[in-house]
Structures are given as structure tokens and as C-alpha cells.
Length: 160
Image (tube, rainbow, N blue to C red; front, side, top):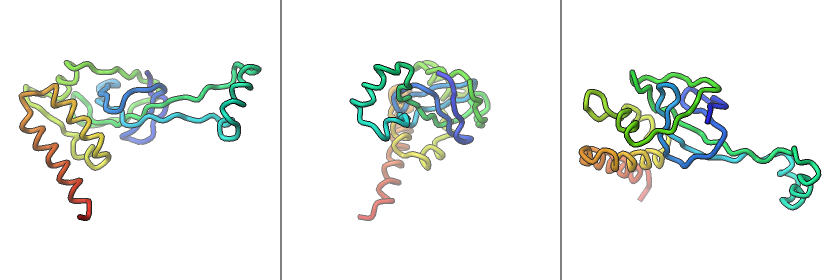
């Protein structure tokens, strides 16, 4: 996968489909997949699926709808800051060991992006923390407190 479109300083898209909540890296930037969308071709707006398939029989080069995954930039792994990814940069899906390494500095657990992620998308923050529960069993107490705070902030926003 490669970056195909930069939306903002904190978001970009790549062509292809990934599950939501997958940690990845582009350069030294830690990212998480946040949304999957399918771009409908122009004909799809005006024709039925059957008509489109009939057209594709005669026009095989007719474009298929494309699927894009949106990524949220979390942090620069080396310095904790963020930089804007460039179009064409390779996106590497991280395995468990690489995720642990990205969230550890001098043996200490860190999540400097958590306040931003909680403001942007609470559900995505829950997914990320759930993944980290499995990878950092020794930090379970801290992660449980963070999850409780997220739940409390959601409840606080709801009028009971």
C-alpha cells in the first residue's frame, strides 16, 4: 500500500482495504487505519448494477469502484512529533513486536497521541487500547484506567 492522497496534517488515504484499528507505519510515522470507503464510479450513480455489468461486457476497461482506507497519523516513532506523509510513501503494516517497540521508550510505555485520538474518534481510541491490552499485559492497570476514563467521558456527554 502507498499513500495516494493527503487530506490534512493528521490524515491521509491509501488505495486498498484494511480493517479499522490496524497499526501501520509510513517512514517513521505511526498511523492507525480509521475508515474504509468505496468510491463509486460515475455510472453507478445513474445505472443499476445489472446495467453496469452489461456495459462492462462490452467495455472491459470500464473502471471498477475503488476502495480506500483512511489513516490517522498518531506520532513520529523517533521523536514523538508528527510530520505530514508524502504521496507515494510506502505503508507498512506493523506486527505485534513492532507495535510494542513503537509504544516503548527506554522501557517505559507511552501513548502521546491519546488525547488527540480521544478528541477525534472515541471508538477508534477504544479499538487501539483494546489492541494494546493484548500486547502490554504488564500495563493492564494503566490501560484499564484509560478505558474507564474514555467510558466516563462518553457517559458525561450523554444527557441522562
